[in-house]
Length: 248
Image (tube, rainbow, N blue to C red; front, side):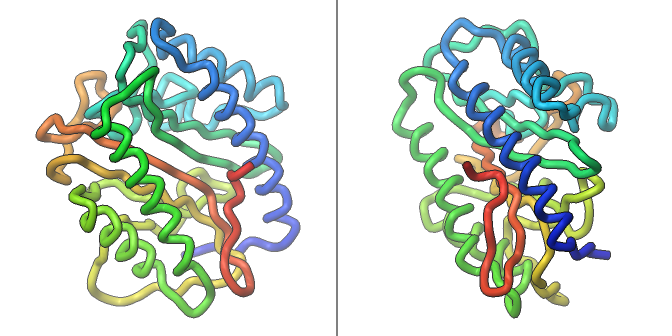
C-alpha cells in the first residue's frame, strides 16, 4: 500500500531532506586522494548527530556503517574500510538519516581527482536519467513512466540500467511501497498521486545489467566488473508536477 503524506508530514520530511543534502555536500567536499572511506563514514556520522538526527543505515539489515561507499564496479551498499581513495576512482556515496519520525535518503557518484572521460560520461548519464524522469512525474502519469524514461535515456547513450535493484517509497519507514524501477515493466500500471514521496535512484552500468554480491558481504557490483554509477533523490508528487526534497 502506498502511503499518501499530509502537508505537515511533507514539511517535516523536507526539513530532514535538506539537512541530509547539506551533510552529503560536506562529505562530498572532503573526498580527495588519500582519505579512507572509513574516515568519510566517520565524518558523515558525526554530522548527522550534530544536526540532531540519527543514521538511517547503521544497523539496518546488519549494515554496520552510516555511509555506503561504493567504488568503481560496485553499484550500491559498499562498506567503508581502510581503503585510501586513489586518483581516478569512481566513488558513490549513499546516505540516510532519521529525524522527527521520518527518514531521508539520497546518493551521488563522483570522481576522485581527475577521472577518465568514460567515468565522467557514466556519471552524467546517470544524473541525466534522473533529471529526465522528473518530467513525467505528475498526477495522471504512472510509476512505470519513470522506469521507461530512465531506461530509454541510459540505453540511448550506450549504457545499461540495473534491474535487480530499484528506488522505493519513503516516510516513517526507510523502504515503503512502491518499488520504483529503473526500466519499463509491462503489466498493471500504478498511478502517481499528489502527496506520494519516494526515492528515484538510477543505477547504470557501462556493461551488462546483471549483478553479484561484492566480497565485503554488503555491496552489489556489476557481474562483468564494468563501471557503475548511482544517483538518488527524494521526490514528492505535487498538484501539477513534483519537487525534489533533497536538492539544496
